[in-house]
Image (cartoon, rainbow, N blue to C red; front, side, top):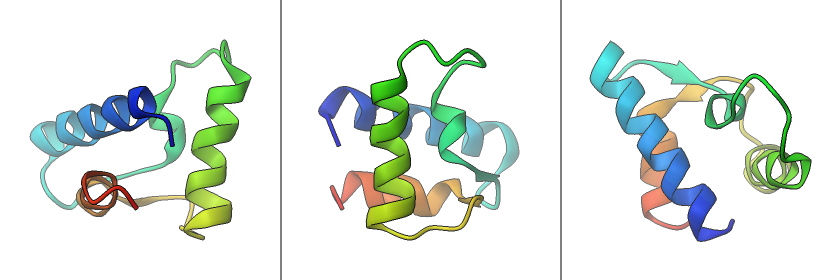
Amino acid sequence: MRASLREKAIAVCEARIAQRGEGVGLSFYAFFANRNDDPELLMEAATWWISIHRLDHFEKAARIRRMLLDQL
């Protein structure tokens, strides 16, 4: 995963956790606006989430943040 996407995803996870608490879940779609203006980046996130890590559609933001910080 490219560094810019990793940083954005970490920021999204941290914002969701700050708003709703440690138990909040999210999907990789949370890292993008409602418009699909960068399909390559969306597919990169989907590949990381689905193909590489085989995560469920919704996962705990705290878990995703930890994975991203550990650069998995």
